[in-house]
Image 1 (tube, one colour):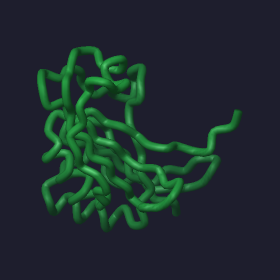
Image 2 (cartoon, helix red, strand yellow):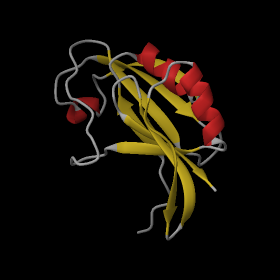
Image 3 (cartoon, helix red, strand yellow):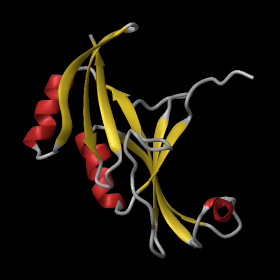
Image 4 (tube, helix red, strand yellow):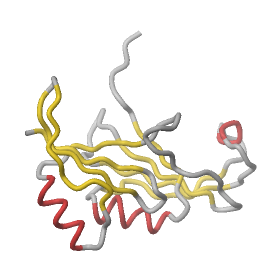
Length: 150
């Protein structure tokens, strides 16, 4: 079997509105769906650690189109959520990286809006090529990497 690519990346968030400010307003993702979903009668209960009856789910694209990867944000609407984001030296998905066209410009825009960076734009040379990279955290502390090919 051969995979065709990443379909989507899903993040559990504590506050959807704060997360939308980050992903939609600051990083420029386009919201294509924002809805409340009931868990009963679906596959969701098999995927939860705790019992939940409903959640708010928002689907965002950086480019809308057939076969394009997208981002899903999920906020549980009834009950406490648990867990903490992990760092690079821990097991699990520790960050996600997005390609950008002009990292220095985006860095300046985000800094002007008060977004703190963990790593400022830095040139990285690898056997596969040279790129600029930087790291920041979303409102829940999930590590986000921004990369620009040089």
